Length: 420
Ligand code: AMP
Ligand code: GLY
Image 1 (cartoon, rainbow, N blue to C red):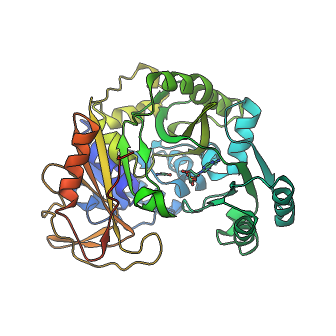
Image 2 (cartoon, protein in one colour):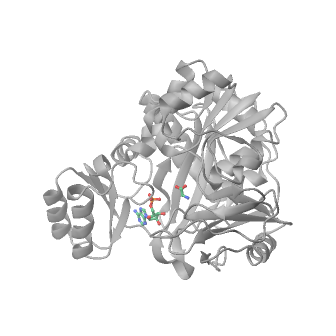
């Protein structure tokens, strides 16, 4: 089969590398892909959000199966467009992708179906939002733009001044465009955060190995939020008892709620959870694999990924065996100095072989360009270095040993992934 993967980050590299192990896969394309991905998949010069261009390419090339990985093409309806053109696709429909595309929709869904989440209010007028916060005086308060915002649409305001600034920039300056037409203001929750990605065909939901992201740029959770600076799997906080509770109170109810709303979800559903004193609650849903969660979850998958993806699409997940390796995985992100703000690119990366790999670890390329046998930096997050081990300390040791041997000018990484 010819398989097309849409996207260009470390997550897509992890999907491509796992698909390359699938029995039925002859050739993989990645649109647009990156330097490191081009070792396993033929790059395609079509932007991930170009629905028409992507479908045209898939038809012309005779693609047998498309995997739509990032949020924006899913929310724009790329999976539907592929299916309409007769190309089987993995990824939720546009209607189902609203679970990530609109926080107002996601919060309403949880409220209507009794799924545990932070208490909240929705506002479409900044003045109302400000007077609400003045009245309640409850801080920190969490302010969220309704729509997609490149992972930057959440502000934790410590006081009224910060809240006013966030509301102003989201709703009036429109720093995220139309995504800021409405905001959600919600209660601040405390507890350990866990990411659970799950395969679902709208009937059964099969959670993958749990994981934990590290979102802040610097050690000790300091500095600005990023797309994620490192991950570990499984999360030591996600016990079998909590997993059982999540299945009963969150995962299954969410799938049923989406069916009742006429938006059956088929794909990878990402549950961003927080383990509070009152029990697990949903912080966010994503309609896709997480990045960099995928870089620790998929290496532990022992079953055939293409087989699972086809079973999801054909609603046969219940009869599909999904096996996971014992042990643990840890991923450390090497980022460009200055990320998530301003940074320079184009620096040669040392410590990688001609295939972009390094002994003893899996190197996922997030933002690289290939020039002959060299790889150059080409993005904010550059590489995700994943170590595998019998336990978390061994996985971390392997990842950090390699990270010490791979470098480029102004490289930055966190030294405390998995320490907590
Ligand atoms: P998101 O962009 O939705 O992943 O949110 C970014 C981060 O903001 C999350 O990973 C949490 O650390 C934090 N966050 C979001 N909502 C809440 C909440 N209600 N209470 C506490 N922290 C939150
Ligand atoms: N790592 C968080 C996300 O993919 O949204």
